[in-house]
Image (cartoon, rainbow, N blue to C red):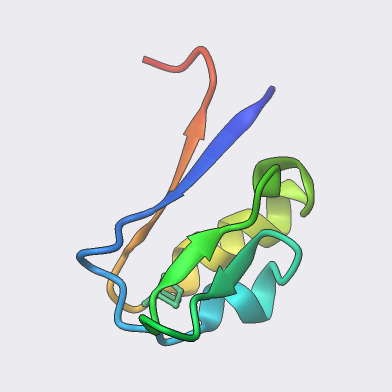
Length: 70
Ligand code: F3S
């Protein structure tokens, strides 16, 4: 099932766990210190890696949205 991923830029504090667990999907903007989703990032990492990134973010800034879920 396709997924979308998002970073809540207001919540992100640059802890970097998302980049550690899914480095093909997330980067940290060096200017702002805030994470961003790499273009096409939702399909560049395994679902498991994306879920780890979501779970390990200490401020819960990562969202994984499964297409078709309500
Ligand atoms: Fe930000 Fe959370 Fe990643 S604080 S850098 S989204 S682990």
